Length: 391
Image 1: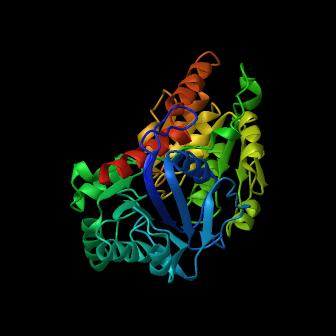
Image 2: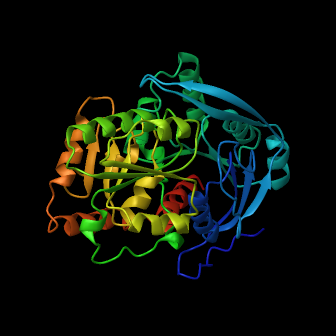
């Protein structure tokens, strides 16, 4: 197809005259909006998925407006044992028709997610077709990558050298990539952004007396998310403070659900566990809570941080989520705590509950302001700049 350098999108952005193929595992709902924005900025975008959805995910895929093909692929379950002391199950995908499909599509640029099998094949295609370009999309943090074996590190370094550009999801990811030898001039941001079509304007003013004691925790109920140690700390907190009521809502599913529900609770502690909600339902659930509580032991970002802050919730989040380290500022829009340090969460809760009703609205405004620019279009800009750089 001939290039059309003069074309623009409906909002005036220039269309990059390039045929692009994106290789990734599956499409989380929050990433769909980003790639829709990216597709508007390119001559063409074709997405090749390793799987329609992973077994431990519970949502209905939505690919409207995107050109998506599910590849032929092998999927393997693997156990992830982290130095933070948890075990987690995750999936490795080996799509085996990638080279064939790329040969048919003949893209100008290949965007390949993660530093595994699909990216190795993408690097091979780049070598076989010197006029093509390769951009590696990486989503990680220094904390999530602790304990990786020497063989994996060596393989990653060789793969990163094959890329014409590399994207990163946050400052810790950028630091990790530079440690692996990627020069700053090949690095471009491709951050996470919440789906702005699901936003519900937060109530103004919020009834602080009705919601202050209500905390919400969204995500999988498994070891990596740190929900069981958090529950034990909260139970201890309420037992030591019988006059402080606390209402915790878990939104999610996972292997620890029954364990959490069966724990003995003091009278001043109320627990509610509800299944996964749609993005719109979750936005309304945020309105009836005072703060978001996320105790993860390892997350390369943690999208619920963005969503909570967009809803005007004060964030009480683990330092082991890159989103908390990047966006949350103590006493301004929330509090960061270390779930592995005894008493740290309790200290942050004391600070939260000691806030006056006059201080809370300012923190809620700061929460919204801290993520206001993090829209899908803003996130897609980083990918566009990476593609333009390699052309």
